[in-house]
Structure formats: C-alpha cells, structure tokens
Length: 152
Image (cartoon, rainbow, N blue to C red):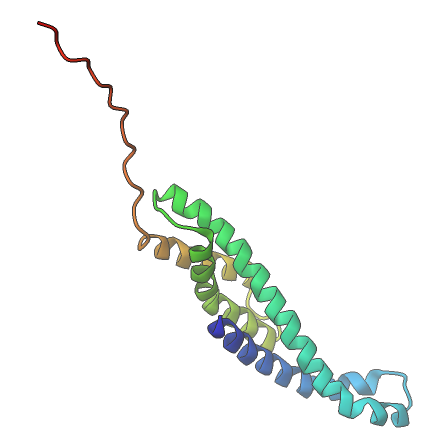
C-alpha cells in the first residue's frame, strides 16, 4: 500500500508541476479582475495539489481493481490458482509503467497515439506474465468408489 501512495504522490507532483506552469495562462484568460485573482492565489495551488492527489489515488485504485478483475479471468485461462487480493497487488505493480506512459502522454501534450489502449494492453501483458508465477491448480480428484470386500 505504501508503494501505491508513493507512486501516486510522485505522479501527482509531476502533474501538478505541469498544472503550475500552465495555470498562469489559464488565469489570464479568465474574466475575473486581477484583484480577485490575487486573493485566491495562495489557496489555488495547495487546493489544486490536494485535489490532484485525491483524484489520482481514487483513479489508480479503480484501475487496479478493474485490472485485478481481468487478472482473475487470466489466471482461470492459464489454469492457475489465485485470490483477488493477490491479483490486486499484482495489478497495482503492473500499472506502474502504463501509468507512466499516460503521464508522459499528458506532459507531452497528447502526442502518443492510442495511449490509453496501449497502457491497458501493457498492464494486461504484465498481468499475463505475472500469472505464470502463480501456483498451478491442483488436479481434480476422482471419486473413489469403494468395492465391498469379496465374499467367500
């Protein structure tokens, strides 16, 4: 769990830096008088960072939960054993590179074509590969019928 919060914090900081750089242009385009903008300035950045962190955390948890559900299907297809809680942790780690891909796409202005589809594909490939390390399902036990002892 620490990993998720640290990772989301780092991505939120990078996203916040991007917001901070572009916020000057956004504020100039508003129709509010400059006096009103100076009054909310000290509140704008901390509130934006907290909001960015909360939304990013919520979004990452939702993505990890959906990826874990897909992982449940993957381990069934591959004939492996696993529980949802294990797959959720695997999904959280598997979403690291795809999340960085989406962050890079956002910071570069959306130049990566099909970034969302690529990120989900990468996450599912990671989960598919990780499922290979899960234990195999035990073979199905056959019902043993007991024969009565032979009478002599």
